[in-house]
Image: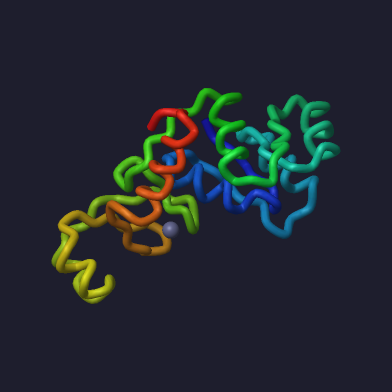
Length: 154
Ligand SMILES: [Zn+2]
């Protein structure tokens, strides 16, 4: 299942990517180009009622996200789309650029992470596109805890 999020939903897009979903983020583009992009097989996530209506008229699947609260937004999309939140780097996509991440040998990233992290952590993942380095903890721990508090299961 692939998504495209409108410019109001950048945070939701990052959280869904961290949970393993392919989410394009339509920042600074016109409604028409969002709809064109969605037509290629992405579900539109939008806070804009008119845009969702336009999408539905073009037979594009869309979810009108109602809350301003990130947790409520995540909860709504997870419920409506029956998503499984798997929050760990090995299941994740890069939250910054939406590309796949792959495991990378520890010795290769010595100079690319803080020293304390390098000493403490043994497994790392790298984004294939932007090269950002990820490890367990941080983002994922945060999401797991929040998701658990909503009783959505992880
Ligand atoms: Zn990336």
